[in-house]
Amino acid sequence: TEQLQANETDNPYFQADLKYIKKTVTNALKKLPKVERLVMKLYYYDDFNYREISTILDVTEHKVFRIHRQAVTRLKNTPDLRMYVESV
Image (tube, rainbow, N blue to C red; front, side):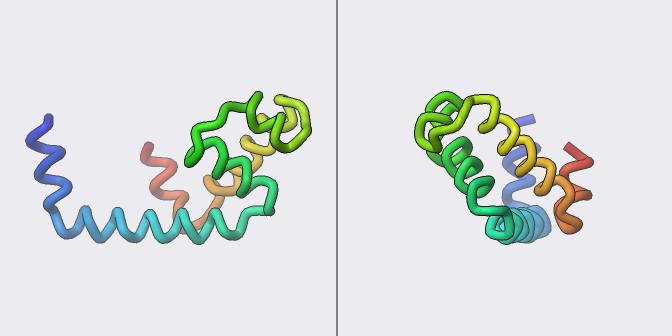
């Protein structure tokens, strides 16, 4: 399995696909409403949990959960990402 993964990363088609996915995700994140984008950044890039984010935003943890869920739904519904999300 490790050999297969190593071969995939060397594959130029895999690299091109990965580059496209990263660009598409970045563009989709930019289109999110500001608060959703912030929650995604804090959660995925800065490794904050819902409680920490709720303190930063001065909202309940449940509100952060709902904002996060809405952002994920928007990203899943991004036409250029749909085929990748469905295959995961």
